[in-house]
Each structure stands twice: as structure tokens, then as C-alpha cells.
Length: 303
Image 1 (tube, rainbow, N blue to C red):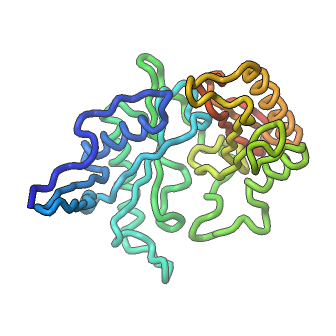
Image 2 (cartoon, rainbow, N blue to C red; image 1 turned 135 degrees about the vertical axis):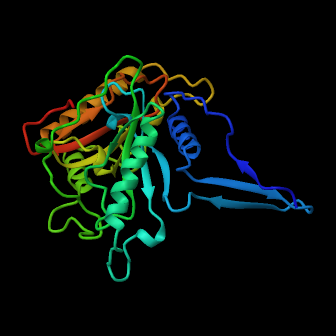
Image 3 (cartoon, helix red, strand yellow; image 1 turned 120 degrees about the horizontal axis):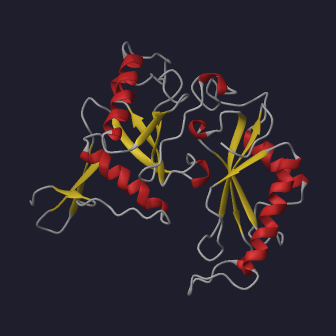
């Protein structure tokens, strides 16, 4: 048989802000270079049959980067992802008994700090999650990893007293459901229904289509008591042409009218919106993404 060879890019991937997966690929590449990420080895036998082997760091847990909507990026960031850290099986909570192994919490603290320091050595800014950081609540820990343009200082992290919530929100090991409270997605969907804005079929209404999904508490605005990730698609008539990549005439007005109506509907229901800093462009964007949240302090749409 042939030797095992690495699968995936051997050179550092090129980052393109317009391609969300490129940021994830770049950070995953650096995690592998740091000895913290996962990798795959492949080989082919004499009959042409291909084999793969999954390789993870031993004794350190494994880190993986994930795409994050730009609406949740720190203000001014040029790249941002979330990174999860999964501990070795021996240091995870027992799903059957609920027991947390001796030394697991200290190990989590050490590895979260070590992971942050390793990424910072490559020029990233790292904010370990305030909430997703304990084996008593979660299977994995999470970090917000981002990069600022040259010469731009990092954001000032909110003070501990700025956070509306002091504990993780469901679902987690201690509380799987929001009941008797309502799920955040349902709160936002009800506000959309009240305003006559559909979110199932693309052309259910002239407004387009909406998807409402949960989003990690790691990136919730500090004042938020609930938060979701909302994506809006234009109607088919105003979608970008698959051949030219350009939007048809009237698309800019369609986007402006629909997004204005969306904002009015949600703010009228006592919700706040947070969008990316860059303006939306129907010729380059297929969707618009925003964070929708309910604040416990006066509503704000800024960080």
C-alpha cells in the first residue's frame, strides 16, 4: 500500500471576505499548524481503493472553526469565526449519569486559555465564551476568533456587569427547554406573522422568504435576553441572475422596501436588530442577515 498523505490544503488558504467559507478554512488551517485541529490522511491501495484516517491531537482535545454570520462580528473586524474545542472523551460529562470527571473543569479552563494564547500568537483576537465554557453545561467550549485590519485596535470587551444574563440559555445539560418561557425563534416568528410577513415558501408573499434560526449565546449582544439569527431572501423576480450574477432592474428598491418593512415589523414588536457594517448590495449579496434580539435595557441597534 501507499503511504498515508495529508488530505486538504498544504499551503495557507487565501482569505476572501466575500466567501464566508474561506475564513473558516484559514482558521482551520492555522489550528492544524498549531497542533490543535483535526486532519485527514488518505492512501490508495494497489486495487485503487481509497482509505481515510481521522487524526486528532492526543490529550489536548480538538478545535474546529465554523462560519459566523457577519451580523454577529465585532465592529470593524475583517474576519471572524467561532471555534469549538472538544475535550477528550475521558474529560467529558457522562451522558448517562451526569457525572463530570474529576479534574475536568480545571482541564477545560487550561485548554481554553492555551487555545486562545496559541491563536493570539498568529495575530488573531480571541474571546472565550462567557457561557459555553463548562462541562457541567456543554459538550464543547467555544471561542470567538477574529482579526482586525492593520492599525485598528481591538474592541473593548463589555464589563461583567453589562451582561443581561448571568447563566447559559437552553438547550444545555441543566435545562433542555425554554419552557415555561417561549423559544426565541417562536417570539420572532410570531412578530413576523402579526406583520403579515411569511417565512416558508420563497414566493409565499411579494416580500420574499425569511428563515429564523438560533445562534450561539457567545455572540449575543450583552443586553439581550433572547437572540436569533434571521436571514431574508428576495423574491425570485428580484434574485440575482445565475448566468451574469447581477440583480434585475428594481432589485435595489425591492431590497430597501422589504428590509425597511422587516425592521419596522420587528422594532414595533419590541425587538432590536443588528446588521453588518457593510451596506447590502443586490448585485453581490444573495441574502440579508441580521441578529434580532430583545433587550432588557433600552433598545439599541449598535454594539
